[in-house]
Image 1: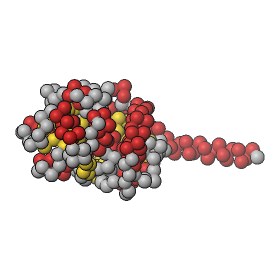
Image 2 (image 1 turned 60 degrees about the vertical axis):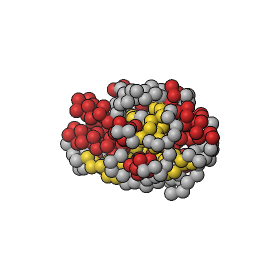
Image 3 (image 1 turned 45 degrees about the vertical axis):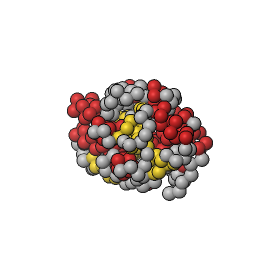
Image 4 (image 1 turned 180 degrees about the horizontal axis):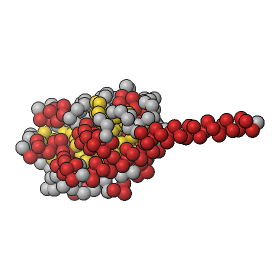
Length: 326
């Protein structure tokens, strides 16, 4: 019996030694950041800017791989089933980690299947319209929609996306009804607005700011508690006449469940180093993104924020009756 006990202790000690040595040597090869959307969108940009700085800190290539489909859940499934070794990570956001989990028949859990590493940036959404839409402001938009329920169309980047749920929340708070038109990404949705194929949309503000500045789109209100510093002249939805329509488009970094704590700590430290860099701060400011306070750049803050968003939005999504299939 004593011999067996000694053997167990020896095996445990060897395992602990192996894990410790692994954590110390990590990373020893390239790291892949999975983004569940095509190149060029907000999430892809966040991954590339942060990933480049992480590369410098960690001493290994950090490669962004775009695995799009089903509101980012194809990429999410890839990370959820990956080995928890720190070499396959997920740059997710509101759509992939909140909205999709409530409507898609995915084989993983958007929270429980991942190990949180850090919050990343947050950006703003705003309600926009084609430039020749008769409504000149939010109150006129609501009146126009109420005059013909379901006639006005609204684009999004897919069912269950942040833009789609922005529309659902706006409808609930304003007593209106729009026809939802899903697109595969923000770029085609914006093009549909510019071409007059759809009437309105709720899209990420920085992507559509140049078209607004050029006079090619109308902006009705920012979907947030405060105005966006990128266009301070644009009122919030509440200021424009529809209170309580708020949705923050936030990003985060996760690994597969079971990622060793020492590896999580190294990755978290690399994120903090990235956000402390003046060039990174300037880059995100130019994009209209907000970097979280330092005390929110940790796994615990991401987990808490993620759970709060699920608790808030899943009842709203499920009450809306949205159904989709992968």
